[in-house]
Length: 225
Image 1 (cartoon, rainbow, N blue to C red):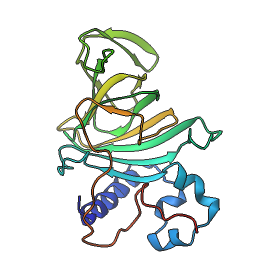
Image 2 (spheres, one colour):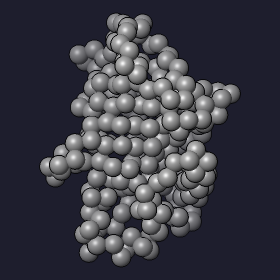
Image 3 (tube, rainbow, N blue to C red):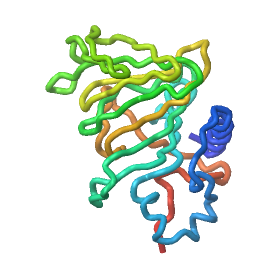
């Protein structure tokens, strides 16, 4: 992805987040120059990869295969953080596919916080990590029931789904209803080793630096000097 594209996406989604009456923490707006001056008191942000995250999953086609994220809080299994939970804000554009994947350890709730409708497609996984053809036990806002493999569940604003470890899922904003502000509440998140994509994907984009960054992404913070 070009840096200019990432900057544009962040600016547009900041406007959408504000329109939805959601407020981000102060560190969201630290500039690259300000990050150079931040000391060890901000190590939790650096080590736990809090902040901006824009991915095209390595496809170079963000409009159709991509996701915008902001990690608000997170623990860290490697540093034995006392924080055992995480929270993210995600934005999916209409028909923008977030590819089929599961998490080895993380259980998460995906919540439609507002905007359009969110479509979530679900499968169980086989022992060899393929898509199973068995019925899937889904948990929607306190209701537990079974659906056929590959069912596409429609979440209207305010609705949510609980996704246990090793349950495959893909999602996107339903076409014709606008982009969706998504909440994610989960166990500790580790995007470096806890994601299993059904088809091989990149997680973080390769960036072409055609202009300076407005804000650093969560994997770009300078080390504390």
